[in-house]
Length: 367
Image (cartoon, rainbow, N blue to C red):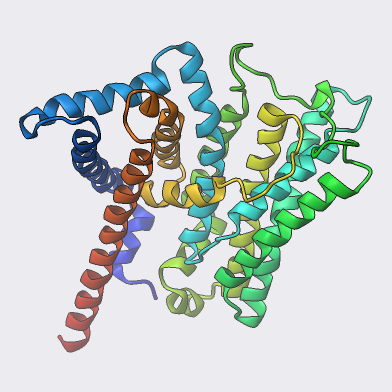
């Protein structure tokens, strides 16, 4: 059975969410505090000019990401895929899994949208849902394969999803470069039909309604986790597999389901990225990186789907402001430094909790 302390997560989701916010916020503050010293070194600030350097760093990041309407909208282009990949990673983490393959699942969503988007003569009312459904199926299959292998054979989902990333990359590049869907003399697919394009907010930016879809998905997954039996079972397996099995929960089924659901959300992210931003798939020399950044988003959000929204905004704003940082004489690597420190502190919180719970279990056994 699940321990009494663990059951608190099931009874008080909102209280748990508020508690989960505190440490990530602290991690962000510490990350910025440490990063300022590198700004001082890069721009020649004196040791007594710490707060001037802090103001310089903060104002540059803010102006580079939210300085005007165009920059704000363009920041949303960075934020949107991170919402999807953050939620995708959070689903796997909630089930005690490491879905390193969100990257490949995102790519499969992209290529499926690029192909389905070429179908002529469809109404947007049909074409756009078709693209989203295609992303769900493609991403779900790509996540479901390692999920099935984990559930039925016990193979490591980490190794399998890493391999699936590169299988997805090479399959996508093969379709882009060596099939009839490629454009002769170019390393990309044709532009999708206008009926398959998501509505953009303004002509000055690529930001589009996919961010609204991402927010709705976050709300839906939150509801699934805390208001349905399916979500309860997934979380139960992640918290205590043995206790969940003792309570009659099918562990194999929920592992496979979590991986399929995780892949499906990543697939939606890839599909909407094509339909809203790219409008075609291009030859990829490397994986796009949204899936890996999504892991950081999920960790900072403490695997809370709603928390993935502000977490994605933070990481998206940092990525969006990198050019402005360089123009202001601050190395763009400061963005990765802030992200790394945040992840380290969040990971430390998990380690502290692990040893704290281990100590409690020893006390219960000995007491």
